[in-house]
Image (cartoon, rainbow over all chains, first blue to last red; front, side):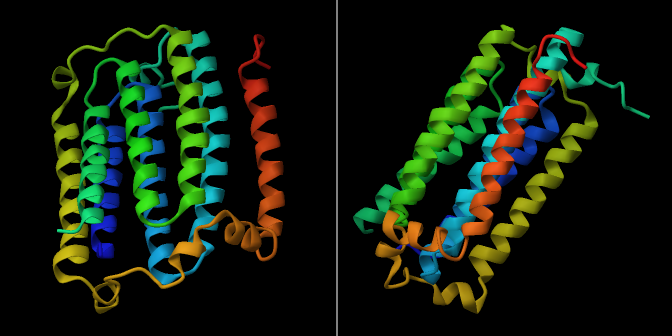
Length: 100
Length: 173
């Protein structure tokens, strides 16, 4: 049998990969994909605990997280398109209009 | 080593390596394709956890819908390759990466080597784990205990749809 630690460690590795991507990349779409990666690693933790505790609530939460991720994808990509139309770039270093 | 352990390690290696490759590619299309590989191997990991419903919607919603939308936007904007990543990184970026890896080491230390007594007790899945992830059981819980959040989800998706149309319209209000 696979102990639950393995799933949790894989989830931690994927989450930190997403964090490093958000911190180092400057392309808005790649930052967006890194956020999807972090959401997925949290989903993995939910499903692992759901299976090991025998409680279906964790899988319900995964369902809702996926719904929120779909909504976020639609709105986020619309923002990226609006940004590109105004600035001709998706590099977030060039988008500093709200920077104090 | 049992066969399910081998399957898990292969899928976990594909998921972790494709994630790391994803954040280091210069071309956004390659990043998106590697992320799709990551999502598909994650669906396989859900199957090793007996979560059939989640595995199917992972492929349908993530790999099928969301990533197609992302690829569509990347190709619509016709993004070029970025410059080499190393030249853009400043000292602050390296410090960020260092602290992120320190957090990872801390999590692995707490989870894996010390392990709580609670986690050490979880060496195998609950007896009802197999039917727990079936569509029948998921639907049962979804439409009894969680029927109100389920309805609210529809309003959320409607709001996102209207928001996306308004934001991407030609004349921004």
